[in-house]
Image 1: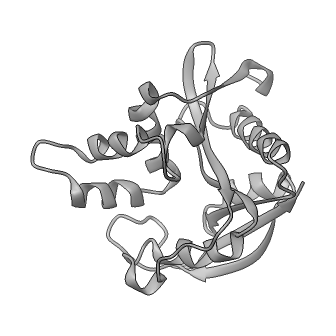
Image 2 (image 1 turned 120 degrees about the horizontal axis):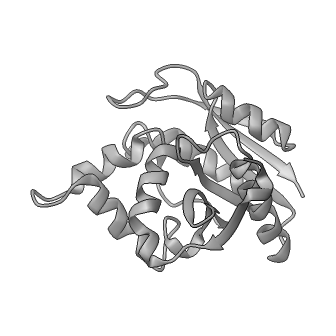
Length: 196
């Protein structure tokens, strides 16, 4: 499979469960950990995540997502949008795994921010990630933005390699904070940017 086999479409509210699964992959388990804390007895963490994805406002909304397809099969997504103001949260008041991301988000003001990129297992290394990243850059240019930003665990060498190959460079880092489900217990969360 090549990236010419990948086509894109805007996400819809009907994609909410898929988006929740993919955002959890992109977030290395942090989303499911957070969602589980607010799930009722009758809900799974994916029910909570899907409800958030169905919203029409906020960063994690289907309205900010683009789905990659191979044939009719959804294989991945990118969630991106502009950051025009610093987050109002104090990183030290947030759950430990989220704090480094919010701290770095302050440095992303004025950029088109890629909140999440994920491709389902079995469809990786086929160009879907590259196609989704390039599409986000087109959206950013069309909206008048000249800089992209993305955050990634430094130990996620595959993702770092992809972003570096696409022209992103590290401008800042924040130390990882521990939590039970995080696969990266040491190192840094990296903030990468690219001029477009």
